[in-house]
Image 1 (tube, rainbow, N blue to C red):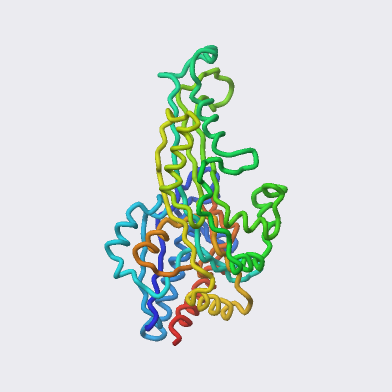
Image 2 (spheres, rainbow, N blue to C red):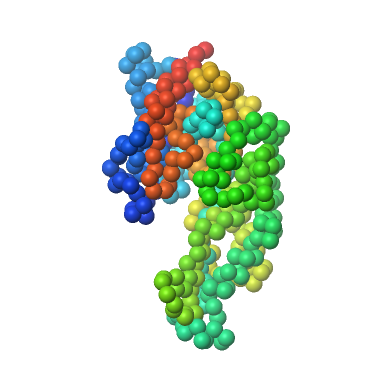
Length: 380
């Protein structure tokens, strides 16, 4: 076809543990009450299967596809796509296209087609503190250094009481949303009640609601403690002074922040605060990427989605998650991209959690939508 479309999917999955919380074996697909349960079925094998089914349906019905398809499928997405950059640089000519469909979107709670135009970047780091050569009796706490307290104090230096990141220069380059992006967020379906129920909270941070909540979620960078490990955390009592402590953090970044720049600023901040003894390791990095709403490819997909659904689409200018490959596609290939509602997923699918699932009705509709979208993109 005259339109060349690049598709991206991944087939690797997150670990299935804790296994005891699954109602059926995670790697034995099981149908219950109209849902298909399995690890990876939502993220992202369901969408991969829906796209494959659409391609086969069009080819069987018409003998050829309405568009030229180039398909990138990887098995390292869940660990940060460590080899994607080299591949994108080496095979940039093979990946060039008029538009790219990422993974991710479906239909929202109001049954409106969802279209996402970008994803936050990320810097993932690990901190390691060594206080003593071995764990000690906690009675020695007055005279021996505590790795646990040292780490807590270092982490506490990163944010103020209001949640603002204290790393000098952290917010340099942060771009506010455009008028078109604000308008898109204002038109999104209200999911606040469902989200509060799903996460068991009475309100969101700072009591945010409405457009202010959506802007904060999409366009605010973060400094999140993903995990802490130190000392004794088993049942009962053990009075111990931990010899070592470790923490992992992810920084979600927005345009135009860059993970390498933030890493160096983090290192400089720790040194300036007197924590240069803490070992800092970069474990992952990804650039933030966003496609403008006004781009012709975006408008063609919005039109096709609304024609298929018979109702207005909801557009998410920037999602809170990270797709590591996007930065490399932008750098080496320069293809505009988005995620369209061809993914059989919904907000309560338990992706990355026990009992991950999709609804079979969503899978059928995802195939139908992909057929409609490929057909629309092939229209001159």
